[in-house]
Amino acid sequence: MAERITAVKGMNDLLPADMGRWHFIEGKVRDLLGRYGFAEVRTPILEKTALFVRGVGEGTDIVGKEMYTFEDRAGEAQQGVMLSLRPEGTAPAVRAAIEHNQFGQEPLSRWYYLGPMFRRERQQKGRYRQFYQMGAEIYGSAEPFADAELIDAGWRFLRALGLDDVTLELNTLGDEACRPAFQNALITFLRERTAELCGDCQRRMESNPLRVLDCKNERCKAAVAGAPSSVDHLCEPCRAHFDALRALLDGLKLPYVLNPRIVRGLDYYTRTVFEFVSRAEGEGGLGSQNTVCAGGRYDRLIKSLGGPDVPAVGFAAGLDRLALLLAGSGRSFAEGPHLFIASLGESARVRALALASELRAEGFKIDQDLRSGGLKGQMRRADKVGAKFVLVLGEDELAAGKAKLKRMETGEEREVLLDTLAAELRACGS
RNA sequence: GUGAGUAUAGCUCAACUGGCAGAGCACGGGACUGUGGCUCCCGGGGUUGCGGGUUCGACCCCCGCUACUCACCCCA
Image 1 (spheres, rainbow, N blue to C red):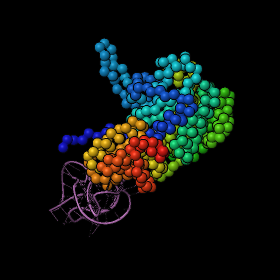
Image 2 (tube, rainbow, N blue to C red):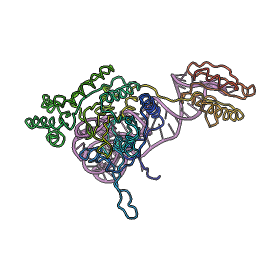
Image 3 (cartoon, rainbow, N blue to C red):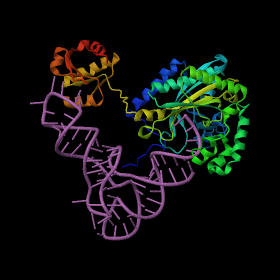
Image 4 (tube, protein in one colour):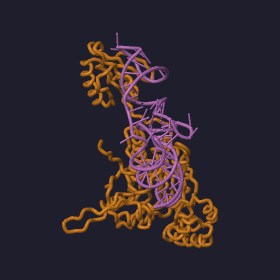
């Protein structure tokens, strides 16, 4: 036997049995975001590495050590260009918007994307090297109304999935006017308590002091309990923005908790940041990877990527994690056929093939067993694939232009004319 | 990148102190000649992750490797 070639580490096959959940999630993305006026954009999976270095931030872990990067084959006279599999969706969407002059043509745009992202991390529950993200972005409004509508869209999306134990956590990071002062205050505070911090945090103090606030170590948590909060160091415009957003969320009856420990891992965020966190625990939960959707405002990103000075706010949701939550919910997302046609005898088989084709053309989802076999086996098959109805087509029925239509759920069965079968199925509410 | 745990049938797991590798589910068939689910019966399926060592004998003990899982880190 030849040696087997297996999938690349951290990259999962989504098998047909999983797709019911995924279609459900993707359907809700299109439905919900469509209602809010978001239009889909699809960008390439491969981008120039420079896009992420500039857009996401050179110092971030994502860009610094998690990207799949390689040199493109060199052309005739030029050097190869460094390319990367996209690790996130915002920078590519912004790149496309700039490239196609979206900002020159529409002062306000709502875009969403959906697709695979790649990060070379050590995988664990809900964290894979190829994973799927949906993201929504609003370009062109600096006002808190944009933040509020976007958060509302994320909230309604998660509710539409039936995820009730998800909570919204909110924070603000300030902007270039007030964040430096806050960071200085924080660093001063931390320096006085260096001895109480874990090794990781002593390192983070210099590299990314905000992260110390997010440490799970109990001693660190205690040490930073009285740390300065970004909310207390906001400049006047940032404070007004945050207060207005909170009032708008209250008006939307959208519950949230303030969490000063939320810090985003991407450099481009300003002002508003938020996370939707799943509180489900145990088998159906997500363990430590429980942030299911997260985002914030990034007013400087478009300009820093060479576009006009246009403000933006957006979020991304991890679809693998949502699928995991749905899988643990015990709900069924089976996509069974309307009708399974069971045929007996060669001429009935021939008729069944044509009948299936006609009904499929009418819009019905039809299944049949393509192997010859007894009625029992075909019934079992129909049950297994979750068919709502079974049509039993034998030689006797065929001669009379009839067949028996059985509703699987109740077992009731009655004769129907083949000519009126489509109308019958429609009437049955299938 | 760091730490811990696990590895036996497609899946979930058994197998006493080292003594013939098993069950449930799933799959196929039958009980029921043209009626699914429930029940009962039968069946196919295995290099016990890989390599070495100890032993009369290894799923079991020892060493190495690999993979996976969870956690840290990071993030959605």
